[in-house]
Image (tube, rainbow, N blue to C red; front, top):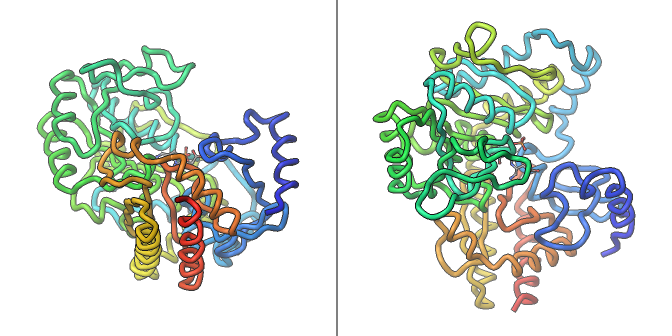
Length: 428
Ligand code: KE4
């Protein structure tokens, strides 16, 4: 595959942008090779600067459930831009998008918009700490909630559940209030509540998408809710990725467990920078300007982004069958991958939730981060390369999630399975 223009572009980018990218995962470090530079998107496809065409299963890491250049979203953005890009003052479209989301969730009376998932989660945690008057938080190994300091933690030494920084630049003091538990392991959560009587909240991806795709077990989430209620801690569902991807009501609508706060991102911006966090009025009214918990943002609720988001959401609300259709496509794709891998003796574990799918090069079921880490990342890298060379664009890490958009048709799924069959044969 000819990728000279991407190679040249990457060299130029690295001279003025750290690592040549504005977000680390894009640099292809875990799969090797040069990241392809994109010229444009078109429906199901990405076209790179060398005019190679790919079926896109990343969709900007989730936002583009309607694929690239969706006519309705594009029209709404252009119409909005003609009235101005940003005002730093309230607009009615923010209220409209807030009303749409609040109408879908019993758990949400009010919602605040921000410009990224990181901001949404950081703000939700500050709100939980302000509302409870407590400082400690619990997160799960393998869950990613954006790059705010108190969430860049790794397991501490030995039995101690308090985290240590996972990145230079994060002072240990910033993570000493973060306790770590194991996904799908309620005993590890009980351990955290034994070690701290000062826990403000537990934050979890109810469908984990950042250690590969691993859904939380429903029984585990029910016990998690009970332990939070018993100890006066809030339960935060981070649905930045799973929101409007797993179902119209995200994972929350699937698992039958009521969180106290929900964070959103990606799909609710329709491809534009939007994050949000919402919950019951009693909690949300603690936020400035009416409440004491400060939170702010110059471009929060940006009208162009709001118009993109509300257009996407209205299309989803109008066609809820989309989720069954997308889930069926994702199931077909993952069954095809499993069947073709099995033919050549490769162990592949797969998961699907709505339009989200994941696959691990692993002989055993993957239920948490320790299991996921035992996957064959070298084989994943070779698979990724083989598929890319054939025109199929997958997430460039074993620890990410794939997505199906409405523009991906049955024929695309068939072509992808055929290509995967060829690549699996090359891997053994
Ligand atoms: P952003 O700040 O990247 O908008 O959102 C952070 C975030 C929060 N919570 C969850 C569950 C997330 O998945 C994310 C971001 N997801 C990654 C993909 N795994 C974004 C891709 C990237 O970092 O470039």
